[in-house]
Amino acid sequence: MNRQCQPCTACCDGWVQITVKGCEAYPGHPCPHSTGQGCDDYLNRPVQPCQTFECSWVKAGSALPEHLKPSESGALVIDGILKWQGLSVDLAVPVGREIPPATLDWLKEFAERTLRPLIYQQQDPDSKLLQKNPLTLAYGPPAFQQWVLEQQAQGKTLW
Image 1 (cartoon, rainbow, N blue to C red):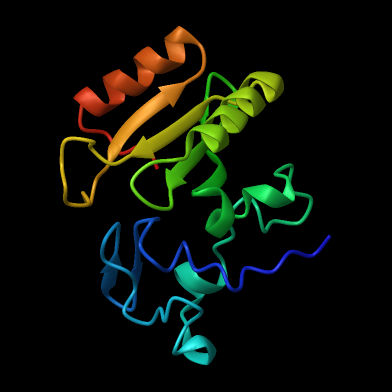
Image 2: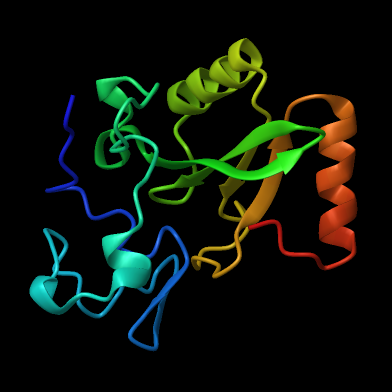
């Protein structure tokens, strides 16, 4: 199966924090080259992150079903962003303010079934503005959840 990103541009639209040619993209602040349907400088896009980045949905052999394409599901998943006690940890970021409940439920069930703890984000429900650094939550064993809280308290970047 060879999935195509287009017309999805969730990674370029700032839902994943990236820097492209010195320009930051983050929630509410898309890459300046994103048209919302693609890149206006596609032929000159940099190797990092543009040519090498693949969300979990588009990767060859993806375990994510068709309906979890970021532009349709409301979540962009990045698999294996880190290891915790020998387990691969996945990240889900919202394409919007928060991951829709049905999508988040699917991701949590997948995390349980595959023994892959999940880190996910959502915008602060009390803020009307999109935050550059959304709330970061953990789903998995209590020890994993505690570890994520400890990393955050120490100001450590998890990915």
